[in-house]
Every structure is written in C-alpha cells, then in structure tokens.
Amino acid sequence: MPASFAFLAVALGLAALTGVSLRLLVRSTRPVLVAAVVVGAFQWWFYGRDKAVETLVDLIALAVLALCLTASTPVNAMLDALVRWLGPLRRFGVAPERVSLAFALAIAALPGMVELALETRDAARARGLGRHPRSYLTPFVVRVVSRAQETGDALQARGLGD
Image 1 (cartoon, rainbow, N blue to C red):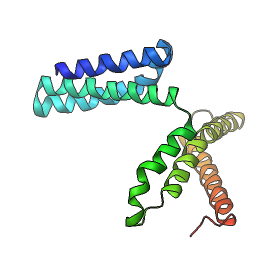
Image 2 (cartoon, rainbow, N blue to C red; image 1 turned 90 degrees about the horizontal axis):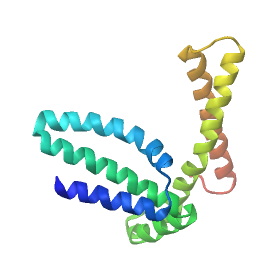
Image 3 (cartoon, one colour; image 1 turned 90 degrees about the vertical axis):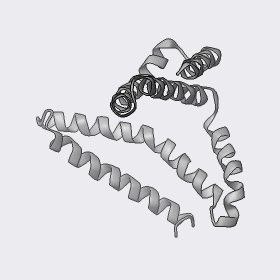
Image 4 (cartoon, rainbow, N blue to C red; image 1 turned 120 degrees about the vertical axis):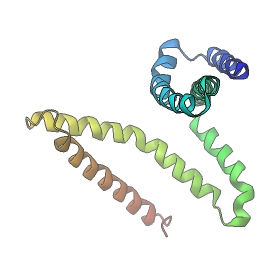
C-alpha cells in the first residue's frame, strides 16, 4: 500500500510538470474515482482494507498518468509509437498500420459522437419529447451506426476494406 501512494505522488508530480491544471485533473479523474470506489469496495469485501486502498489509489494514479500522456504527447506521436511497438507482431499476421488506423479513427470519431449526441438531444427537446431515454437513444444509435457505415464505405473506397 505505501508504494501505491508513492506511485500516486509521482503521477501528481508529472501532472504538475506537464502543466495539467488542477481543474482538468479533477474533472478528468472524477469518473475514474467512481469506478475505483466500486472496485475498491469489492476488493475490501474479498481481500480486506489494505488491498482495497491499494487498488483505489493505483487506479487513480493510472488515470492521472494517462491524462499526463495525452496532455503532453501529440496524437501522431502516440500512433507512430504504436506502429513501432506492434512491428514485431507482423510475423504473426498483425498489421501495425491498420491497428494504428483503427486507433486514429476511434480518436477522431469521439468529438463527432459528442456532437451527434448534443444534436440528437436538442432535436428531441425541440420535438417536445423532453428527457425520455427512448426519444434520445434510438435516434442517436441510428445516427452513430449510419456514420460508422459511411466511414466504412469511405475506407473501402480507398482500398482499406476486406
């Protein structure tokens, strides 16, 4: 357990070095904290207090380190590193460039999904449907699937489909 707190201290020190603001740090780690508390509760139940605290602190430290990495490293550099790391797996049939492309598409799709979610929510409100989950989720899922199909068609048109 003491090593976990040292690990968290190192992660927080790196966050300070990379210039991550306290506001961003708190906002980004809040969802992880909720999940960590749930996992920690299970750990407490099965393994005791020490293991639960260690797990909780480790998960928060990992989230802080992930935030430091994404805040300080350009996406292209991360994708290039991924291609290099997966290079030895070519002999087993892994295509590192395709894996990197999949990651790049996922990263690029996230802002689009948020935009679709906001547009769908606004459209449901404009129709007077309010907060009913079905009035929001069904059109959102249809739009997300449609966008995924368009992306797949575009990739296939460029010769990247199987």
